[in-house]
Image 1: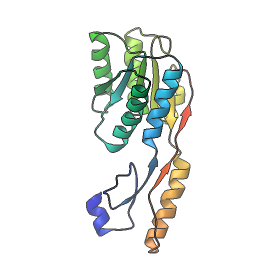
Image 2: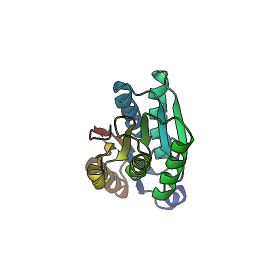
Image 3: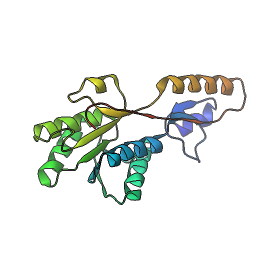
Image 4: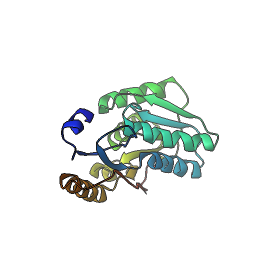
Length: 193
């Protein structure tokens, strides 16, 4: 993306902003979203946190950062199950983790698709959701409301994000100054947490 931005300055991307990048980004406040998930789980009295996903991409790293920081501030451990984000791989990683030991009582997945794989692995292992383990995803994809149980998630406001992306793109094409922007996320409460 950085190489393209050097040749095409108007480039605007949905994603996490980093101070050293040249392209503009519009994206969810992933740190705040991760923190929001942890704070909701802490308020429920959960104490054994697990993050599931690939912590390398900037957006996922920020989600983990906010989640882990809130857990640390509450003096709670936060385990990380680093896994590629393909649904079957996430499912297998969670199933293997559950077979190895103590079941976490709070799981935050890097995306809703990963969270759906978490729900499947927990259900197959006979773990009560949310009684034993609460699960929160990120994105609020359409299917999140239709899982069983329905998925509590962090919603990215794509409508505002899209408006900001178009606004910034038109400004950059016109040669006007424009800056990256962060869109606040929202906690969407459903049955899984």
